[in-house]
Length: 170
Image (cartoon, rainbow, N blue to C red):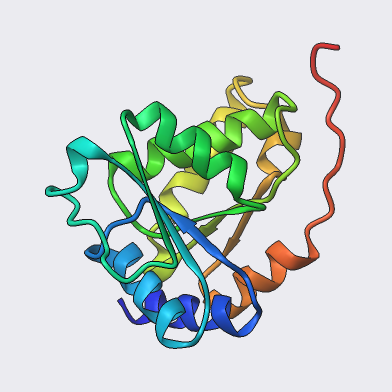
């Protein structure tokens, strides 16, 4: 939660809007709180079905209520200029892998990053290395993943990101 609050403060101080799932709980809720407390903008996108489960944040700059998870993810991907995954569960990984996959196949050229708090994502990078060794993932795709353990450094990496074209299937 400490890293979440620090990330929110950094986003606000850098004038970066938070685009996220709209909850007031968990790491993302803490980021949104810190963004708002520090004068930044926080935009949430939440499906109707999850408004009670995820407890929709009541103090956001904007809250978009959509019908489905597909709509939520599409709107977040459209509005965001980059992506940071905090430690989380299968939903976090599913959303992050989708935007990484879209980067791999050229649907966008936005940075995809992992905030590796307490080495949470270190095993995932080991899995990527294993997938590369086994021939299922190209080395160039691994280079699309930005990772840091410090919120300030991950924001710097996002700000300095320069997309590179990876020849795929065209």
